[in-house]
Every structure is written in C-alpha cells, then in structure tokens.
Image (cartoon, rainbow, N blue to C red):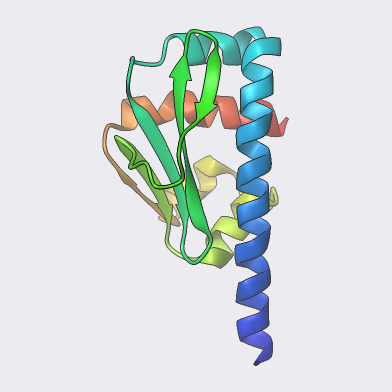
Amino acid sequence: MSQKTMKIGLQQATCAIVAECLVRALQYLSTADSKIQAEAHNWPKGKTLRLEVPGAGGVTVTGTPWGFRKLDKETPGDVTIRFKSPSDAFRVFTGQLSVAQAYAQHKFVLRGDMALAMPFVRCVDITEG
C-alpha cells in the first residue's frame, strides 16, 4: 500500500469518526444549547440534510421539536453537502478550514435548498466553538 493511499484512508476514517461525533454533539447540544435548539425546532418538518465524504460514507440528520436526530445511513437528504475529496473534508473536519472558506473555495458541492443548509452550518459553527 502506498503512502498516498494510506494518507487518503486515514483522512476518510478520520472524517467518518468526526462526522459521527459531530452528529452526536448536535443531538446533545440541541437539547442543551438554546441557539441550536431553536434552529432544530424551526427546521422544516420532514426535511433532511446529508453530509457526505468520498470513501467515508455520510450522515443524514433532521430537525425535530426535540432537537436534531440522526437518520438511517442510507437516507437521502433533501439537501446534500458532498465534499469533493477526502482531503478537503479532512481540512474542514479538523478545523484547518472553516465551512465558509470551503464554500468560497468550492471544496464541496451543495445540492438542494441553500436556505435549508444555512441553519445546519450555523449549528456546526456553534458546535465546533
């Protein structure tokens, strides 16, 4: 196995772990933090957001009156944020690059209603803080 292949594999594994931790943190904070709780409560009913990293899979969340909730791994998103590469996702997930910078640098593709993605991004910024 080449060093480049190992690096990509490590980035994919790290992204999968961080995505899982992020969703769990959002679930907890949506009951403990008033700002995140308000965003989750105001989420349009039945709408989902999917976060995907090439080779690492993805997570899908929805907002409920009780907070954010993780859905089945294969649930498609009404809005999907798909990173273009594991290294781009790795830089965002490890705090080397903000979501706003990644968006400005075209490091991911957003499919769906951007207005639905913005509350999620605000919650991610609060969670990372």
